[in-house]
Length: 271
Image (cartoon, rainbow, N blue to C red):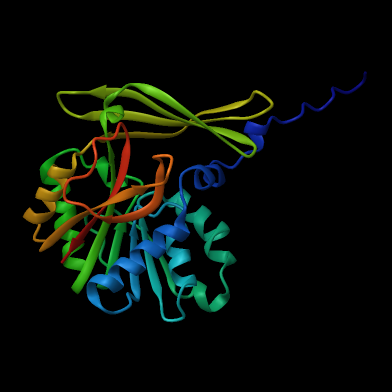
């Protein structure tokens, strides 16, 4: 042969890690619905403005503005590249009028300056990047300052005995397998190193597509720090179960929780 046959690209080489992440990890529609419904229940009015901290691709911010003609959103992330991806692949898909109501800021959530908002959200455990009480309290204080007088801060957290085990968990999706890798855990410091890998039907892999080094915070610690930061009412919303004992996606206030091997909960902090 006078010319080498062009090598076919693998599925891993063709894949977009942000699309994979959203398909495996994020579900912004019920998340935004939870924010809106909970805010309405607690405040007796609709929330109009939302700041998505650690926003990544800003999918939640985009979903927020889709749900109301008078809704606007601010997304904050320190990674300029992922923000550019979000502008190109998420914000650009909105109708022009809605695009104008999404503002993306390449900044540090600890010192970003934005207008006051009804709701701030920090999800996918992103704020766990702050590994000392001082750092996390400082972040919580900055969030409280940017909320309107009756504003609410929403966070998520995970836990259970499996949160402290070095292990891998595989979940199959259409066209790929998602692998959550708890690679390291230090009991003395609660420092954890976690990775997300993706594997494809052709055998190719995306190893360490996402990497995280954070502290596994407990709910009592988080509640105490939020109260120390000045929040007046901090409530944990626990997930209910279906008839098979699996999570049903419905969250309600719970002062005790359940001793599950693995759980995810929302924390709702009222200014």
